[in-house]
Image: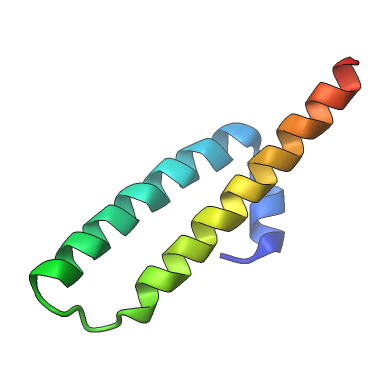
Length: 69
């Protein structure tokens, strides 16, 4: 997921996508622990996507908090 795609999402969509990515990460970790998955770099990509989503959510929360003050 690219940053440009993340910026296009609404805050609700970001939260939904974040929860989806977290469940995906959990499933990938479990599958990798049971038997080696075909592409283990996918775990890293999902972790980075989660970080990008969290960063954008934090930016939006900070922006809305500064607007209220």
